[in-house]
Image 1 (cartoon, helix red, strand yellow):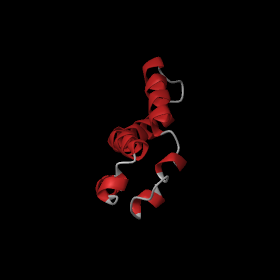
Image 2 (image 1 turned 90 degrees about the vertical axis):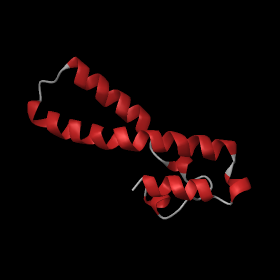
Image 3 (image 1 turned 135 degrees about the vertical axis):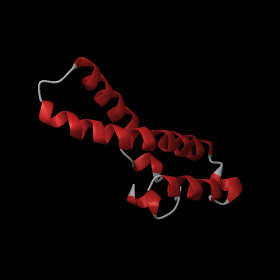
Image 4 (image 1 turned 90 degrees about the horizontal axis):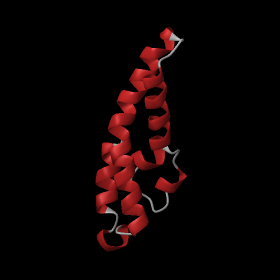
Length: 85
């Protein structure tokens, strides 16, 4: 995410972890219940961050995949990257 916070760069999004997969796994864990109650708060804090980050990540991925940055000089990517921080 540090690359993205510094401004959109072609290909930077493809080098990021799959935040959506992490979010899904943590949501599944939450639904299944936990025997580690001391970790529940940390999981929930991370889910709160991911709930904000994943929609931006998905928009950036679609933007990058479509190569729309070639038409707008990376303007939308810079706007979305600012949201990620």
